[in-house]
Image (cartoon, rainbow, N blue to C red; front, side, top):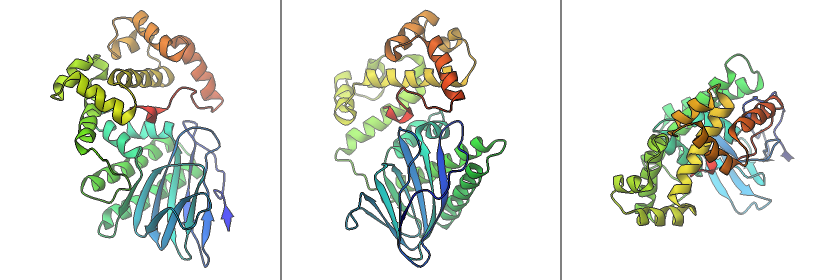
Length: 310
């Protein structure tokens, strides 16, 4: 049996979300999920009973095997199929990168949570009953608030998504099973530290040499790691982080351009406007007007999403 998300409840105006329970009754069940818009999306699946398999396309012999109780988080491909064996139960939430950005927030932990969100992680929860129960509650709340939105629903959803990511972060750091492996642990640690420094200091407009010095390496070494691991030089990563923050402030605050420029470490609004226009292809004032119009039409931003950096 093949089916899509069982219902199409009202969606959050901030970003599209799908959430529901998973059941397979007396027969195996196969389903696909998708959000009705283009863009990055992510899925958390909590399996509370039975077994399941995540595959890409109709290839039953391949894919990732899950056995309850476990929590899977993965960037979602619209071609994925989820196969539940008879008697399996659980719940899921599928969300877009805009909800992810709000859930991750803007503090020193954000870099860690972003790294978690961009990975495929499967954590066994057999000895983690407290985490299991909290994840069950989180997914129940997300499903209820998504299907029956009320005052503050978006805040509740964002908070519970963040809670799931924190559990993934804690358990994976403690040695939980991850489906991703890094062939260069020292480079991965350096990149992780750079992300943390970047998150804390991008508003201060640190030069790349200062990041490298704080990390105890040369600028060339930092450039090599970023280029090799991410395909981008560190300067581009810093600028993309500044652009992401600028977009959020233009879209979701009423701060003036002068105030935004000051918050992001620019000398004045003219310098900020040149920086923004060069990278976005339009001045910040016009971007704000177009973003307001898109929001009223419930359309997503045409510029890169949160998880496109770094």
